[in-house]
Amino acid sequence: MATTLKKTDVVVLGFGWTGAIMAKELTEAGLSVVALERGPMRDTYPDGVYPQTMDELTYNSRKKLFVDVSKETVTIRHTSKDTALPNRQLGAFLPGNGVGGAGLHWSGVHFRVDPMELRMRSHYEERYGKDFIPEGMTIQDFGATYEELEPHFDFAEKVFGTSGTAWTVNGKKVGEGKGGNPFAPDRSSDFPLPAQKNSVSAMLFGKAAEAVGYHPYNMPSANTSGPYTNPYGAQMGPCNFCGFCSGYACYMYSKASPNVNILPALRLEPRFELRTHCQVRRINLAPDGKTATGVTYVDAAGQEVVQPADIVAVCMFQFNNVRMLLLSGVGKPYDPDTGTGVVGRNFAYQNMATIKVFFGKDQHYTNPFMGAGGNGIAVDDFNADNFDHGPAGFVGGSPFWVNQAGTKPISASVAPPGTPGWGSGWKKAMADYYEHHVSMDAHGAHQSYRANYLSLDPTYKDACGDPLLRMTFDWQPNDIKMNLFMQEKMAAIARAMGGKAIGVSGKQEGARFDTSSYQTTHLNGGAIMGVDPRTSVVNRYLQCWDVHNVFVLGASAFPQGLGYNPTGLVAALAYWSARAIREQYLKRPGALLKA
Image 1 (tube, rainbow, N blue to C red):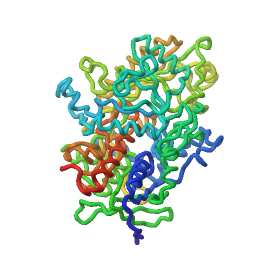
Image 2: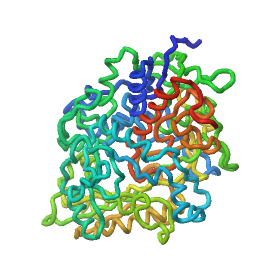
Image 3: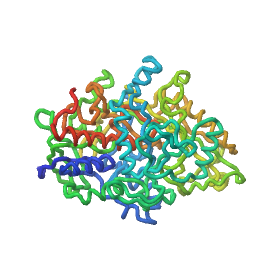
Image 4: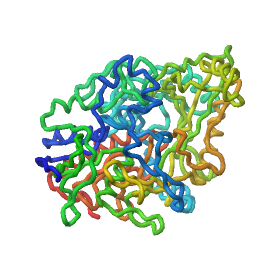
C-alpha cells in the first residue's frame, strides 16, 4: 500500500535545468517545492573531483552520468509497420541520470534562437507559399515571440555566466570586427563575460570561412572566460581548456550546470526539498481528470509513495516528459493514421554532417587534446532562413562550426579516407594526423513529420512494470536534401583550408536512422506548445490544455528541432513559464488561455 505524504505546493519531476529554474522561481514566490529526481545525487564533488573525473573510459565509454538502459530505455522502429525493439546500448543519444541531468553532462554551447524559428510555419508560408512545405511535414509556430522571450534569454545567460560577443545591444551595433554574429537578433544587454579565446582549429575555420565569403563569429559558451558570480550568488572559475566537458562534471566550476549555478542557492531555501532515487510512475488526477492531485513514485527502498501537490511541473528529459503524460492519461495520444491527438506528435531530432580536414606535419598543429565544450567559431550564413530556400527546395537551415571540445585518448582515432582499419598503416595514420586535423560540423535543424512520433510500447516494460516509450522515427527526403546541400556549402570552407585530405560524414540518398551513430542528445517535441489545443499539448506558457495545474517544460515543447543547440531556448521558456505562474496563475489558478 502506498504511503501518502504531506501536501506540498509544487512537485517538480526531474532536477535538470528546467527543474532547477522552476524550483528557484517558485520558492522565491513563497511556495514550498519538492523536487523528485530518479537518479542519484551528483555534484562537482565527488563526480567532478580532479583528477578522477578526467577518465574517458568511465565517463564517455561506460557512460557513468547517463541513463541505465537495463532499467529504463526506449524502443525504436523506423515506421509504424515495423516492430520496435528496445535500445540496449546508448549510441545515437545520451540521456542523463541524476541531479543536474543533461545540464550536468552537456558541453556548454549556449545559443538563443533565430526569431524566425519561433514562427517557422508562418514564415515559410509568407515567404515561399504554403505549397513549399512538403506533404506530411507538420512544423508549427511556437506561440511565443523572440521579443517576449528576450528578457528571459538575457537573465538565463546571466545565471549561466555565458561568454560571447554581442552584435547589437538595444539596437546599437557593438560587435562588428570583434567576433559578433551579424545574423543575431538584438539583445537588451551584452553577454555577462567576453568570448573565450579560440583554438587553432577554430581560427583556421574562421579564416577559411571569411575567404569563401561567409561571416564567422565567436560561439556563445556557458564555459566561463573569467571568474564570475551569478545573480544567485553562485561563483564560477575560469575555464582552463582541459577538454573534459561533454559527458563530465566540470572540476573547475567553469561549465554552467544546475548543480553549480542554481542548487547552491536552493540549498539555503527552507521551502525546498530535493529527493533522489525517486522513480515517478504517474501524475495522479482528480476524478474529473481535469486537475492533478500530485504524483505517485517509487522511492529508493522500492516503496510506493504518493506526494500530493497543488502544481505539478514536469521537468524531465524530453522522452520522459512525453512518457509521463502518456502513462498518466494527460492529453490525447497522437494517432498518425488520422493525424488527431497531440501527445507524442511532432517528434524531431537533429540533422548532422561532419567534415574533417587533414594537414601535413609541416602545415598546422591543432592541439586537439585541449578544448572547451561551448567554445568555437561558427557561421550562420545557411542557418534558419538566412539564405534563399526557394532554389534549394527544402525546409530548414544549419549553422556550421568548429567547436573544439577536446579529443580524448580513446576517441582520438582520426584518419583520412583510405586509411586501413587496423595494423601498422592505421597506427601510422593515427600518429601522423592526431595533431594535424580540424573537425567541423553542420548542426542542422530537423523538421517534424506526421510519420515520426512517440507512443507507449505494447510489449516492453521498465523495471517498475510500466510500458516503455516507443520511438517511430526515420529520416525523410527533406532531411537528406538539406544535409547534402549543407555538406557542399561547408566543404567550401574545408577546401579553403588547403589540407592534404578531406573526410565527409553525412547523409546520402536512401539513408536510414542508425541508433549506433551519435548525433546529439537534442531530441524535441512530443508535448509541443502552441495556441490551438487540437495541435498542441501545452499552451504558450507550457501549461497543459487539459489539466490546468500541470506544466510541462523542456525541449518536448519544441514543435520542431532548431539549428542551434536547444538549452538556451529551454532555459528561456522555463523562466517565461515560471513568470506566468508567479504573476498570473497564483492569483487565479486555472487555465491561463482559453482552449
